[in-house]
Amino acid sequence: MKKAYLMAVLVLAGSLAKAQAPADPTAKILEFRNADYKMGKIPFGKPVEYVVEIKNISRDTITLIQVQPACGCTTPSFKPNEKIAPGKTTQVTIHYSSNTMGPFTKPSNIIFSGGLVKQVSFTGEGFQETTVPPAPGNSTGTEKGKVEKN
Image 1 (cartoon, rainbow, N blue to C red):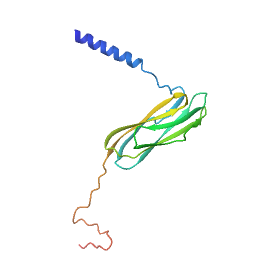
Image 2 (tube, rainbow, N blue to C red):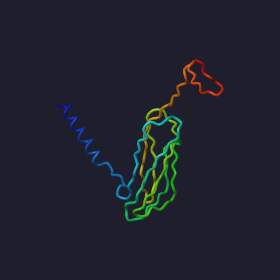
Image 3 (cartoon, rainbow, N blue to C red):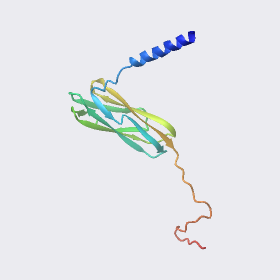
Image 4 (cartoon, helix red, strand yellow):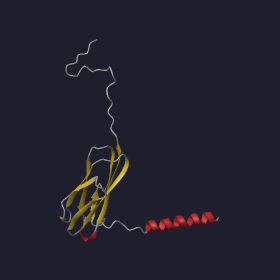
């Protein structure tokens, strides 16, 4: 009986904590496209990028101040101190050097005027591309200077 009571208390406490979690402060001011981007499988060492689109849905001009990636393998491209008028859209391109094997998540913080910060991230899975060398004796006859005899 005590176990059931304890479990009920834990479930209720978890529900209350989730209900009181702060909402995204940027949600009433900015709309984001690709804020949580899924890249899929990425060959190790082949750089990739994606674009986060940001639209100002407020009545005030917002300034894009800075983009801070969490690691050195991620580099943002954006216009520092860009003013985004109401109804206008801007873009932040996130470049990734693809130097991770296996599953990964890479976050970046986009910082706006008024103390607003939006964390965006991308996920993927790095894998090693393999090249299969031709089997010995299986000449294709396409190498310069070689002729295959039958």
